[in-house]
Amino acid sequence: MRLRGVKRYHWARDVDEALSLLSAYQGKGAILAGGVDLARSPRTDIEGLIDITGTELSYLRADSAGLRIGATTTLSAILDHPQAREYGGGVLIQTLRTVAYPALRNMATLGGAVVSAHPWADIPTLLVALGAEVTYQSPEGEKRLPLENLYQTDFRRVFREGVLVEVRLPPWEGAFAFAKITRNAGDIALLNVCAGLGLREGRIAWARVAVGARPARGERLTWLEAGLVGEPPTERLWEQVAQEVRARLEVGEDRRASAGWRREVAGVLVRRALAQAAGKAAL
Amino acid sequence: MKVYFELNGKAQYVDVEPGESLLSLLRRLGMKSVKEGCGTGECGTCTVLLEGKPVRSCLTFAPKVQGKRVTTLEGLGTLEDPHPLQRAFVEAGAVQCGYCTPGMILTAYALLETNPEPTPYEVREYLVGNLCRCTGYRKIVDAVLLAAEWKREGRWR
Image (tube, rainbow over all chains, first blue to last red):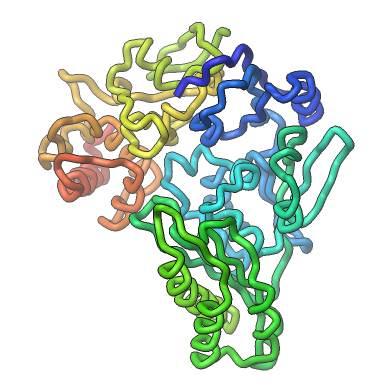
């Protein structure tokens, strides 16, 4: 890798400085944290790199409102953080320990994964299922909204002009589980699923299911979630879920997998993830 | 631009291009153990330790090492005085063409720093991003387990 055309490397002291540098470059500047995606990008128009890893955005805090994770926190730092371990029935650890491999997890940041939002990536599927909210600084000021809503908009333009600062994960009474299929360990997913539920008096009180790499980016199956509420979490229910997912899920094909394969596997992975989440929620 | 950092225990004050990779910088400085394989972070042969943690030097922008510690294989051992991990790789027959070896050894070194008693599964899990096209992985895993044993016995540095 050598990004040709880069004239300057800036260490932003704070988010405001990063924003004003970004604006000064008029589209020819790029925010850099771990750099994993930027270094692989084929872009030749970047003249200024703006490193935000010195802006104190590497942190993880837990309180009654859930978890707050700074945008430049590396995946390794989340994995090593004691307060990340219990969240959502351990789903952060379960998911992140299979994202890429140690050397990349030491570089890649949570914010980078949110901003790059590769359709095959595991982290958007995880965060959408968890109902993550993101905070970013834009030229018009600070904004905070559900990531799911942001992904419905022209978010790439938003992040060309703004700086993501924090990801918030709400607290959940219940548990989540993550499931995916890859061709080999460390490879990108052919399909990924994050599902969670809460139980009240032996019945499902709420459910969240997101499926990604279809090959489109992870989105929730709200039609499936609604039908689960009030049902007891039994094998029979999971079998019905698998059938419904196979019948209704929108999937596509790419060079990695066919639509037929994805439809079949989605049923299995959603069933497995829900059953696993139910097992953890019942503990 | 100028970058100040510590390479294998020695201070460096060098010129880098702002868009240059750490891989390119290290090779310019004579660290020829750092190899380019894929150039996209997949293969692991360019792995170096940044502040003791494995990173891909092909995807790390050189200015990022400002004020930090970088370790390459040259910092672990020499031909005359190899590091115990290097000896273990030779003893277990874990080296064939050698291209992946520097990345394997540095990654294994970082693993043993945090987990001195890894299971074979944990070794495989940690080395998952380092590809070898010659020996297969069995002897590499054997080498790391042997080195872990030596480390527990105090034959280490």
